[in-house]
Image 1 (cartoon, helix red, strand yellow):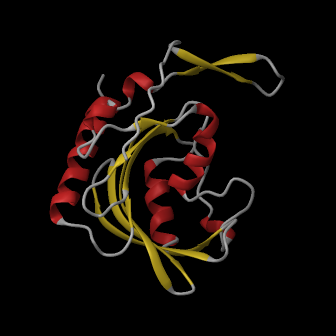
Image 2: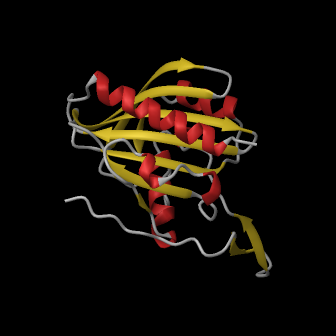
Amino acid sequence: MRAVVVVAAIALSTVACSVDGDAVRVPDLAPRTVASDAFPFGPATTVPAAQVPNAVADITFTPLRSQNQPADCTPSRVEAQSAQVRVGPAGASGGTMTVMLTRASDTFDDYVTGLRECSDFVLGGTVRTRVTTNIGSVADDTVVSGRTLSSNGVPYARVYEMVAQRADLRLYVQNRYAGHDFSAAERSATRELFDSAYETAFAD
């Protein structure tokens, strides 16, 4: 059953707290996030703000309260306060498609270097979930990769991922599925969603 939760964006910016406790304005990335009806296999749901930190941790493979093993393979954190996350159904694979737009603390080159240097690590906060990464194409601001999540040597999930970044604005598009059931048509649909999300995020 495909349930759609409609979350209304009332303000054009959100409020966070600075180190000294004063309210600060966090730029709203909602206008730069691809529309829910752009998802190819059915409309997406906007993740509620209270659940965004967990979603960010899941998408970026960055534990909330621990480190990956080795610790150097814990990615630099991205900003959860301003992050926009939308999750929709995938195709025949039965997985999910996710778009996240956020602010990154590291550069795109740093991100790609991290992918290359940490192609095999244990995800912190889990019972030895191993994440392996195969990098596909790398362009000026975009990298395509495939990830495999396994437990006790048995793969249980795969992620087809496209990440783009300009300045500190970073876009993630993922198709997460189980098994090997990932058709060329679904790969193409994921790329088309990425293209739409890219145009929306970086339009100036």
